Length: 148
Image (cartoon, rainbow, N blue to C red; front, side, top):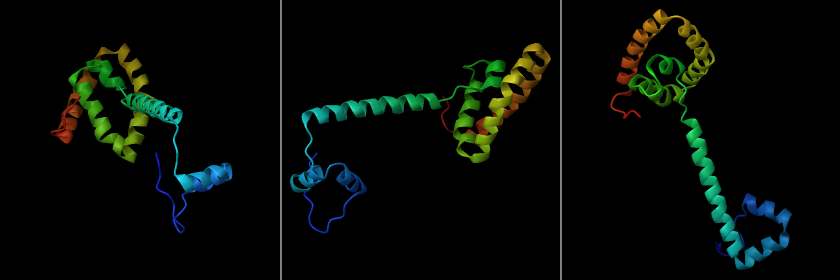
């Protein structure tokens, strides 16, 4: 990575200023000859990029949140209804401040609701009827977006 040689009057970046405090001679040589990268540094940069890419992919995988307690309890984890509710959460709710607050509140109370439903099959029937109405509204809002 060779940088073009600096001319008098060129701006100095914040990184270059920080490097000046670190090693003045290095900055001077880079100014005269351009930035020189050794083969070892190039290999380290490739390794660093690969590690950063893995970190990014792990972070993205962690954000594909599969928690949907009530729908999972009522319909199952891979049911179409559960997928629609997850898609609505990701596409609509999580993109707005009030939606994120609603989702956070849901995550706090839903596990308790599922424990209550475990003890009462009649509540499960009522919740499934209510959720089907909610799912239909969510599908309408999502429109033509492809669902997972």
